[in-house]
Length: 377
Image (cartoon, rainbow, N blue to C red; front, side, top):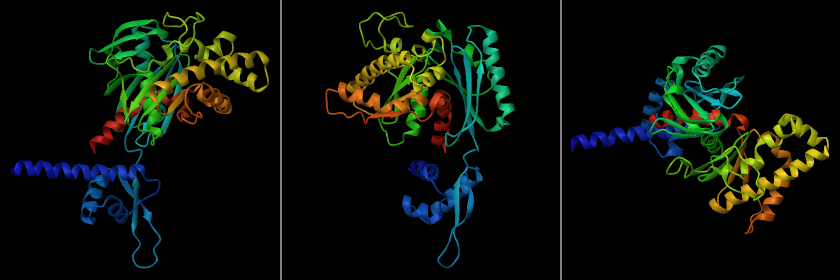
Protein backbone atom coordinates (compact mmCIF):
# COMPACT_ATOMS: atom_id res chain seq x y z
CA UNK A 1 0.00 0.00 0.00
CA UNK A 2 2.82 2.40 0.88
CA UNK A 3 4.37 1.82 -2.54
CA UNK A 4 1.03 2.56 -4.22
CA UNK A 5 0.68 5.87 -2.35
CA UNK A 6 4.26 6.80 -3.32
CA UNK A 7 3.60 6.14 -7.02
CA UNK A 8 0.35 8.13 -6.84
CA UNK A 9 2.09 11.06 -5.17
CA UNK A 10 4.88 11.01 -7.75
CA UNK A 11 2.38 10.96 -10.59
CA UNK A 12 0.45 13.87 -9.06
CA UNK A 13 3.66 15.89 -8.80
CA UNK A 14 4.46 15.09 -12.43
CA UNK A 15 1.00 16.18 -13.54
CA UNK A 16 1.26 19.43 -11.59
CA UNK A 17 4.66 20.15 -13.11
CA UNK A 18 3.38 19.40 -16.61
CA UNK A 19 0.27 21.54 -16.09
CA UNK A 20 2.37 24.46 -14.89
CA UNK A 21 4.72 24.13 -17.85
CA UNK A 22 1.82 24.00 -20.31
CA UNK A 23 0.35 27.04 -18.59
CA UNK A 24 3.53 28.94 -19.46
CA UNK A 25 3.49 27.43 -22.95
CA UNK A 26 0.01 28.78 -23.65
CA UNK A 27 0.57 32.13 -21.93
CA UNK A 28 1.01 35.19 -24.11
CA UNK A 29 2.62 37.25 -21.34
CA UNK A 30 4.90 36.53 -18.34
CA UNK A 31 3.15 35.18 -15.25
CA UNK A 32 3.67 35.33 -11.48
CA UNK A 33 3.38 32.60 -8.85
CA UNK A 34 0.06 34.03 -7.76
CA UNK A 35 -1.25 33.96 -11.35
CA UNK A 36 -0.41 30.27 -11.57
CA UNK A 37 -1.89 29.43 -8.17
CA UNK A 38 -5.13 31.25 -8.98
CA UNK A 39 -5.57 30.00 -12.54
CA UNK A 40 -4.63 26.36 -11.85
CA UNK A 41 -6.13 26.16 -8.35
CA UNK A 42 -2.83 25.10 -6.80
CA UNK A 43 -1.28 26.04 -3.48
CA UNK A 44 1.62 28.49 -3.46
CA UNK A 45 4.02 25.90 -1.93
CA UNK A 46 3.14 23.48 -4.76
CA UNK A 47 3.67 26.19 -7.35
CA UNK A 48 6.96 27.27 -5.77
CA UNK A 49 8.38 23.72 -5.73
CA UNK A 50 7.45 23.05 -9.33
CA UNK A 51 8.78 26.39 -10.53
CA UNK A 52 12.08 25.62 -8.86
CA UNK A 53 12.30 22.31 -10.71
CA UNK A 54 11.38 23.90 -14.05
CA UNK A 55 13.92 26.68 -13.57
CA UNK A 56 16.64 24.20 -12.60
CA UNK A 57 15.91 22.38 -15.87
CA UNK A 58 16.23 25.68 -17.77
CA UNK A 59 12.65 25.50 -19.01
CA UNK A 60 11.46 28.79 -17.53
CA UNK A 61 13.22 32.01 -16.54
CA UNK A 62 12.59 35.25 -14.72
CA UNK A 63 11.16 37.96 -16.95
CA UNK A 64 11.25 40.93 -14.58
CA UNK A 65 9.13 42.67 -11.95
CA UNK A 66 5.51 43.65 -12.44
CA UNK A 67 3.95 46.96 -11.44
CA UNK A 68 2.48 47.13 -7.96
CA UNK A 69 -0.08 49.41 -6.28
CA UNK A 70 1.85 49.09 -3.05
CA UNK A 71 4.13 46.66 -1.30
CA UNK A 72 6.71 44.35 -2.80
CA UNK A 73 6.67 43.94 -6.57
CA UNK A 74 6.16 40.33 -7.73
CA UNK A 75 8.62 38.65 -10.08
CA UNK A 76 7.20 37.35 -13.33
CA UNK A 77 8.40 34.33 -15.27
CA UNK A 78 8.20 33.06 -18.82
CA UNK A 79 8.97 29.97 -20.85
CA UNK A 80 12.43 29.47 -22.37
CA UNK A 81 11.56 28.50 -25.93
CA UNK A 82 15.07 27.88 -27.24
CA UNK A 83 16.36 25.54 -24.55
CA UNK A 84 15.63 22.59 -26.87
CA UNK A 85 14.88 22.26 -30.57
CA UNK A 86 14.18 19.68 -33.25
CA UNK A 87 14.92 19.57 -36.97
CA UNK A 88 12.56 18.58 -39.75
CA UNK A 89 13.85 17.48 -43.16
CA UNK A 90 11.50 17.35 -46.13
CA UNK A 91 12.51 15.32 -49.17
CA UNK A 92 10.83 16.30 -52.43
CA UNK A 93 11.57 15.42 -56.07
CA UNK A 94 13.89 18.40 -56.61
CA UNK A 95 14.76 19.81 -53.18
CA UNK A 96 15.68 19.14 -49.58
CA UNK A 97 14.15 21.51 -47.04
CA UNK A 98 15.42 21.79 -43.47
CA UNK A 99 13.78 23.64 -40.59
CA UNK A 100 14.84 23.94 -36.95
CA UNK A 101 11.90 24.40 -34.61
CA UNK A 102 12.07 25.51 -30.98
CA UNK A 103 9.75 24.44 -28.17
CA UNK A 104 7.15 27.02 -29.18
CA UNK A 105 7.10 25.66 -32.72
CA UNK A 106 8.83 28.80 -33.98
CA UNK A 107 11.08 28.22 -36.98
CA UNK A 108 14.51 29.38 -35.81
CA UNK A 109 16.38 28.34 -38.97
CA UNK A 110 15.33 27.32 -42.46
CA UNK A 111 17.05 26.32 -45.67
CA UNK A 112 16.03 24.97 -49.07
CA UNK A 113 18.62 23.09 -51.10
CA UNK A 114 18.39 22.08 -54.75
CA UNK A 115 18.97 18.32 -54.70
CA UNK A 116 17.01 16.00 -57.04
CA UNK A 117 15.99 12.76 -55.38
CA UNK A 118 17.79 9.58 -56.35
CA UNK A 119 17.53 6.20 -54.72
CA UNK A 120 21.22 5.70 -54.02
CA UNK A 121 23.76 6.12 -51.27
CA UNK A 122 25.14 9.39 -52.66
CA UNK A 123 21.75 11.08 -52.17
CA UNK A 124 21.48 9.83 -48.60
CA UNK A 125 25.01 11.00 -47.88
CA UNK A 126 24.13 14.40 -49.31
CA UNK A 127 21.12 14.60 -47.00
CA UNK A 128 23.21 13.71 -43.94
CA UNK A 129 25.87 16.23 -44.94
CA UNK A 130 23.23 18.91 -45.53
CA UNK A 131 21.96 18.41 -41.98
CA UNK A 132 25.39 18.83 -40.41
CA UNK A 133 26.13 21.89 -42.55
CA UNK A 134 22.73 23.32 -41.58
CA UNK A 135 23.45 22.90 -37.86
CA UNK A 136 26.86 24.55 -38.28
CA UNK A 137 25.63 27.38 -40.49
CA UNK A 138 23.00 28.48 -37.98
CA UNK A 139 25.16 27.74 -34.90
CA UNK A 140 22.63 25.24 -33.54
CA UNK A 141 23.86 23.41 -30.44
CA UNK A 142 23.71 19.66 -31.07
CA UNK A 143 23.51 19.13 -27.31
CA UNK A 144 20.03 20.70 -27.40
CA UNK A 145 18.82 18.74 -30.42
CA UNK A 146 15.89 16.49 -29.46
CA UNK A 147 15.80 14.63 -32.76
CA UNK A 148 15.50 14.79 -36.53
CA UNK A 149 12.28 14.15 -38.42
CA UNK A 150 12.26 13.16 -42.08
CA UNK A 151 9.16 13.55 -44.21
CA UNK A 152 8.48 12.48 -47.77
CA UNK A 153 5.43 12.04 -50.04
CA UNK A 154 4.87 8.34 -49.53
CA UNK A 155 3.27 5.63 -47.41
CA UNK A 156 5.38 4.69 -44.39
CA UNK A 157 5.11 1.28 -42.72
CA UNK A 158 6.87 2.11 -39.46
CA UNK A 159 6.04 -1.24 -37.85
CA UNK A 160 7.88 -3.18 -40.56
CA UNK A 161 10.49 -0.51 -41.19
CA UNK A 162 9.55 0.10 -44.80
CA UNK A 163 8.71 2.93 -47.15
CA UNK A 164 5.95 1.23 -49.11
CA UNK A 165 5.62 3.58 -52.06
CA UNK A 166 6.53 7.14 -53.10
CA UNK A 167 4.85 7.69 -56.49
CA UNK A 168 6.57 10.98 -57.36
CA UNK A 169 9.97 9.36 -56.62
CA UNK A 170 9.14 6.23 -58.58
CA UNK A 171 10.06 4.39 -55.39
CA UNK A 172 8.67 1.15 -53.92
CA UNK A 173 9.67 -1.03 -50.98
CA UNK A 174 12.65 0.82 -49.51
CA UNK A 175 13.98 0.05 -46.04
CA UNK A 176 13.58 2.95 -43.62
CA UNK A 177 17.01 2.25 -42.19
CA UNK A 178 18.59 3.40 -45.45
CA UNK A 179 17.32 6.91 -44.68
CA UNK A 180 18.13 6.92 -40.99
CA UNK A 181 21.38 5.00 -40.58
CA UNK A 182 23.63 7.91 -41.56
CA UNK A 183 22.12 10.31 -38.99
CA UNK A 184 23.64 10.09 -35.47
CA UNK A 185 20.48 11.42 -33.78
CA UNK A 186 17.05 10.08 -32.85
CA UNK A 187 15.12 9.93 -36.15
CA UNK A 188 11.42 9.73 -36.97
CA UNK A 189 10.05 9.29 -40.52
CA UNK A 190 6.55 10.40 -41.49
CA UNK A 191 4.39 10.96 -44.55
CA UNK A 192 4.60 14.60 -45.65
CA UNK A 193 0.87 15.36 -45.52
CA UNK A 194 0.50 13.79 -42.05
CA UNK A 195 3.41 15.92 -40.90
CA UNK A 196 1.96 19.06 -42.45
CA UNK A 197 -1.44 18.32 -40.96
CA UNK A 198 0.05 18.01 -37.49
CA UNK A 199 1.83 21.36 -37.90
CA UNK A 200 -1.38 23.07 -38.96
CA UNK A 201 -3.38 21.46 -36.15
CA UNK A 202 -0.75 22.71 -33.70
CA UNK A 203 -1.26 26.21 -35.09
CA UNK A 204 -5.07 25.96 -35.05
CA UNK A 205 -5.38 25.15 -31.37
CA UNK A 206 -9.16 25.56 -31.31
CA UNK A 207 -9.71 22.60 -33.67
CA UNK A 208 -10.08 19.29 -31.88
CA UNK A 209 -10.93 17.56 -35.16
CA UNK A 210 -9.56 18.76 -38.48
CA UNK A 211 -9.07 17.63 -42.07
CA UNK A 212 -5.94 18.86 -43.80
CA UNK A 213 -5.56 19.08 -47.57
CA UNK A 214 -1.97 19.47 -48.74
CA UNK A 215 -1.43 20.93 -52.19
CA UNK A 216 1.94 21.01 -53.89
CA UNK A 217 3.31 19.01 -56.81
CA UNK A 218 1.61 16.16 -55.00
CA UNK A 219 -1.78 16.36 -53.29
CA UNK A 220 -2.36 14.58 -49.99
CA UNK A 221 -3.97 15.03 -46.65
CA UNK A 222 -4.28 14.19 -42.99
CA UNK A 223 -7.02 13.67 -40.43
CA UNK A 224 -6.70 14.69 -36.79
CA UNK A 225 -9.43 13.49 -34.43
CA UNK A 226 -9.43 14.88 -30.90
CA UNK A 227 -5.95 16.21 -31.65
CA UNK A 228 -4.55 12.81 -32.64
CA UNK A 229 -3.60 11.77 -36.17
CA UNK A 230 -5.83 9.09 -37.63
CA UNK A 231 -3.63 7.15 -40.03
CA UNK A 232 -5.91 4.26 -40.89
CA UNK A 233 -5.46 0.50 -40.70
CA UNK A 234 -2.68 0.45 -43.29
CA UNK A 235 -1.51 4.05 -42.75
CA UNK A 236 -3.26 5.18 -45.92
CA UNK A 237 -5.95 7.47 -44.54
CA UNK A 238 -6.69 10.90 -45.99
CA UNK A 239 -5.17 10.22 -49.41
CA UNK A 240 -7.41 13.00 -50.64
CA UNK A 241 -5.26 13.52 -53.71
CA UNK A 242 -6.32 10.16 -55.07
CA UNK A 243 -10.07 10.36 -54.69
CA UNK A 244 -11.85 10.45 -58.04
CA UNK A 245 -13.50 13.80 -58.79
CA UNK A 246 -14.28 13.54 -62.51
CA UNK A 247 -14.66 11.17 -65.46
CA UNK A 248 -12.58 12.93 -68.07
CA UNK A 249 -9.75 10.39 -68.17
CA UNK A 250 -7.05 12.77 -66.94
CA UNK A 251 -4.01 10.76 -65.88
CA UNK A 252 -2.51 10.89 -62.37
CA UNK A 253 0.97 10.08 -61.04
CA UNK A 254 -0.50 7.05 -59.25
CA UNK A 255 -1.30 5.43 -62.62
CA UNK A 256 -5.07 5.91 -62.31
CA UNK A 257 -7.28 8.60 -63.79
CA UNK A 258 -9.28 11.62 -62.64
CA UNK A 259 -7.76 11.87 -59.15
CA UNK A 260 -7.90 15.23 -57.41
CA UNK A 261 -4.11 15.44 -57.79
CA UNK A 262 -4.44 15.21 -61.56
CA UNK A 263 -6.46 18.44 -61.51
CA UNK A 264 -5.08 20.33 -58.50
CA UNK A 265 -1.37 19.64 -58.39
CA UNK A 266 0.56 22.89 -58.66
CA UNK A 267 2.04 21.32 -61.80
CA UNK A 268 -1.21 22.30 -63.53
CA UNK A 269 -0.22 25.92 -62.93
CA UNK A 270 3.47 25.58 -63.69
CA UNK A 271 4.78 22.50 -65.50
CA UNK A 272 1.84 22.37 -67.91
CA UNK A 273 2.54 25.96 -68.96
CA UNK A 274 6.34 25.68 -68.72
CA UNK A 275 6.48 28.44 -66.11
CA UNK A 276 6.88 28.68 -62.34
CA UNK A 277 3.99 28.93 -59.89
CA UNK A 278 5.17 32.46 -59.11
CA UNK A 279 5.00 33.35 -62.81
CA UNK A 280 1.49 31.94 -63.06
CA UNK A 281 0.06 34.02 -60.24
CA UNK A 282 1.90 37.10 -61.42
CA UNK A 283 0.32 36.69 -64.85
CA UNK A 284 -3.07 35.94 -63.31
CA UNK A 285 -2.89 39.12 -61.27
CA UNK A 286 -2.00 41.05 -64.41
CA UNK A 287 -5.07 39.74 -66.23
CA UNK A 288 -3.64 37.00 -68.47
CA UNK A 289 -6.75 35.42 -70.07
CA UNK A 290 -5.15 32.01 -70.63
CA UNK A 291 -4.12 31.82 -67.00
CA UNK A 292 -7.59 32.94 -65.91
CA UNK A 293 -9.19 30.04 -67.82
CA UNK A 294 -6.72 27.58 -66.24
CA UNK A 295 -7.40 29.04 -62.79
CA UNK A 296 -11.17 28.82 -63.19
CA UNK A 297 -10.92 25.11 -63.98
CA UNK A 298 -8.48 24.66 -61.13
CA UNK A 299 -10.83 26.28 -58.58
CA UNK A 300 -13.77 24.26 -59.88
CA UNK A 301 -11.87 21.01 -59.34
CA UNK A 302 -10.53 22.12 -55.97
CA UNK A 303 -14.02 23.02 -54.77
CA UNK A 304 -15.23 19.51 -55.67
CA UNK A 305 -12.44 17.95 -53.64
CA UNK A 306 -12.91 20.19 -50.61
CA UNK A 307 -16.68 19.74 -50.66
CA UNK A 308 -16.21 15.94 -50.73
CA UNK A 309 -13.95 16.12 -47.69
CA UNK A 310 -16.48 18.29 -45.87
CA UNK A 311 -19.33 15.92 -46.70
CA UNK A 312 -17.36 12.95 -45.38
CA UNK A 313 -15.82 14.48 -42.27
CA UNK A 314 -18.11 17.35 -41.21
CA UNK A 315 -15.24 19.27 -39.63
CA UNK A 316 -13.00 22.26 -40.39
CA UNK A 317 -10.88 21.81 -43.52
CA UNK A 318 -7.45 23.45 -43.67
CA UNK A 319 -5.73 23.86 -47.04
CA UNK A 320 -1.96 24.07 -46.84
CA UNK A 321 1.18 23.53 -48.87
CA UNK A 322 2.93 25.58 -51.50
CA UNK A 323 -0.39 26.86 -52.90
CA UNK A 324 -1.32 28.63 -49.64
CA UNK A 325 0.51 31.97 -50.05
CA UNK A 326 -1.24 32.52 -53.38
CA UNK A 327 -4.70 31.29 -52.46
CA UNK A 328 -5.67 34.00 -49.97
CA UNK A 329 -6.39 36.58 -52.67
CA UNK A 330 -8.80 34.17 -54.37
CA UNK A 331 -10.38 32.71 -51.25
CA UNK A 332 -13.77 34.46 -51.78
CA UNK A 333 -14.03 32.80 -55.21
CA UNK A 334 -13.32 29.39 -53.73
CA UNK A 335 -15.72 29.89 -50.82
CA UNK A 336 -18.48 30.92 -53.24
CA UNK A 337 -17.97 27.69 -55.19
CA UNK A 338 -18.08 25.66 -51.98
CA UNK A 339 -21.34 27.30 -50.92
CA UNK A 340 -22.91 26.43 -54.26
CA UNK A 341 -21.78 22.79 -54.08
CA UNK A 342 -22.87 22.11 -50.52
CA UNK A 343 -25.91 19.88 -50.00
CA UNK A 344 -26.53 21.64 -46.71
CA UNK A 345 -26.47 25.26 -45.58
CA UNK A 346 -22.69 25.56 -45.36
CA UNK A 347 -21.44 29.00 -46.25
CA UNK A 348 -17.88 27.84 -46.74
CA UNK A 349 -16.70 29.28 -43.42
CA UNK A 350 -15.36 25.86 -42.45
CA UNK A 351 -12.47 26.40 -44.88
CA UNK A 352 -9.21 27.77 -43.49
CA UNK A 353 -5.82 28.45 -45.01
CA UNK A 354 -2.71 26.91 -43.51
CA UNK A 355 -0.44 29.11 -41.42
CA UNK A 356 2.85 27.31 -42.04
CA UNK A 357 3.02 27.70 -45.82
CA UNK A 358 5.56 25.53 -47.61
CA UNK A 359 7.35 24.84 -44.31
CA UNK A 360 4.47 22.90 -42.79
CA UNK A 361 5.89 19.46 -43.53
CA UNK A 362 9.29 20.27 -42.03
CA UNK A 363 7.70 21.87 -38.99
CA UNK A 364 5.22 19.06 -38.45
CA UNK A 365 7.74 16.23 -38.50
CA UNK A 366 10.01 18.18 -36.12
CA UNK A 367 7.05 18.70 -33.78
CA UNK A 368 6.98 14.93 -33.20
CA UNK A 369 9.96 15.42 -30.90
CA UNK A 370 8.63 18.64 -29.37
CA UNK A 371 5.33 16.91 -28.47
CA UNK A 372 7.17 13.96 -26.90
CA UNK A 373 9.39 16.30 -24.93
CA UNK A 374 6.44 18.22 -23.55
CA UNK A 375 4.76 15.00 -22.43
CA UNK A 376 7.92 14.02 -20.56
CA UNK A 377 8.08 17.16 -18.40
